[in-house]
Image (cartoon, rainbow, N blue to C red; front, side):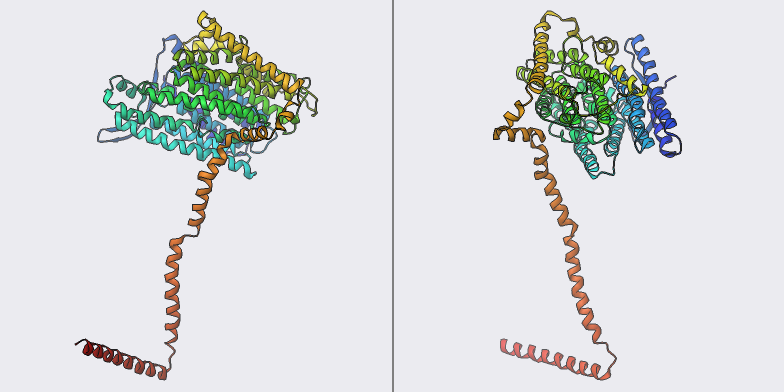
Amino acid sequence: MNIIVFITLFPLFGFLFLSFIQGAISRENTSIIGICSIVISFFITCFYSVRIIENNNQIFTQMLWQWLSINGFNIDFGFILDRLSLNMLFVITGIGLLIHIFSSWYMKSKEGYSRFFAYTNLFIASMSLLVLADNFLFMYLGWEGVSVCSYLLIGFYYTKSQNNYCAFKAFILTRISDIFLMISIFLVYNQYHTFNFQQIKFVSTFLNLENIYDLNFITFFLLLGVIGKSAQLPLQTWLSDAMVGPSPVSALIHAATMVTAGVYLIARTHFLFLLTPEVLYIVGLIGIITILISSVSALVQNDIKRILAYSTMSQIGYMFLALGVKAWSAAIIHLMTHAFFKALLFLSAGSLILSCKNEKNIFKMGGLRKKLPFLYINFIVGGASLTSFPLFTSGFYSKGDILFRVLQSGYFYFFLIALFCSFLTALYTFRMIFVIFHGNNTHEVTPSKNLNHNIPLFILLLFSTVFGSYILPPLLDVFPVSFFLKDDKFILETICSILSISGIYLSYYFWIKNLHWVDKILNFKLMKYLHYFFLKGWGFNWFYNISFVNFYLFISKILSFDPLNKTINYFLRIICVFNHYLLKTSNGYMRWYAASMIVGINSFFILILFYWLNLNLVL
């Protein structure tokens, strides 16, 4: 029996049920319904993973319904479950389940408890639909579904106008990108006469080289269509502002799943990008520039969640870089390891913020390592994995594999920038950790002993270590080669290890041993300007406001007065004036009518006389 559809249906049923009975049941029952729907999807995913591994990469398909059939034009909606979609489902349902369990503790004292679980269930349903769809159109339904959920969850605390602004910003920027995705889907059908991924892949193997020009447009628009969702240059500005939502939302949508949808779509259509190496180079170029911009920006941030947001941009950039050099497996491996340690960091950050009475500024914390030892360990392990700390962490193997594949590809400048940004990652990550957990204590905090808080964090902690590198290969059917320390990788891994440890040491030296060095540097006017420039994300928001937003508001203000309507109203007023005075002529007095007739007849004869005199003069 084929039960793939239930992976999507159970979270969808959870959303519908929680939406209809809003507030009618207790919070405990609400969380049970929200969590159990994800548990069922996760177990179904595990069931199919065993079957795929046992049956030597068998591909499962399930036809749902025929949406359209007109004169040979057929659109079928169905599911496809292969290695790629299976890996994504483990991230969506597995990490999604842990985040749901954590959320039952995190949201217990907040308003909108049932609404929160309804939104997150809808998100899981939409994201699973996105990765299971067997064609572009069905995939696009899930693609837009996660956008709606992102808007709802970013603006979850809707009573604050700033949160609504950030939600609108995320929604609009991703919509700009989605326009190009729609164009690419139309171009795909025009070229292949089908939306089905498997059929397009089959036809691409026999593609005539004369059609490569059109194919460049397809892959280029596909790339433009995914950079918004994955927060890559130049549509990356929404992600740092999206941190106004609850911390579990940041972990679920903006670290583990939604932002990786672009990586998934490029990997799913890699057979098209292989035919267009120029566009594939642009994928890597966008990735490496985003890595550089976000790494430098994270180095000067004070908000803990914004630091993690910029680190997410940079890690997605590493995935794009891997895709650009055709390292498909390396990109997906890093996608999964990143989901583990970044979810760990975001959830730990959420717990930390609650403990510090909603304080997010890292320089207003400090000295928390003794009072919050479990969170301290989580940050150390998650941060170490993010910085590719050697041997002990899963991030070391996944990111090391990407760097090695970039070096192998011959893009030496990409490799050098990626290596430098790996050092910056260690610098800003442990800057955050040392400032928060070392130094002088400023907060009275109490560690949480709730199982719903501790168990998800412990599981994510475990998978962020080298243990995750043992679990992932059976799922991917690809062992992380860097784990075996082959001779041709040993030098690179040694360099990466030195950079990672050096970044950690410099963070300790500058922000623990010699904390006043920042003030000394910022005394220079140029450095103060650079600091402000990087703090504001390299001025992208300013540029967009000047170039697009203000111009749009200016045009909107003009159109709000409706100049065409004013022109029509002008003629209307003239008619009203004439009507006003003409009505006065109908006053009911006979003498007025007689005088009017005499004046009218005399005026008529005067005009005839004037015309006759002019005619005689001409003759």
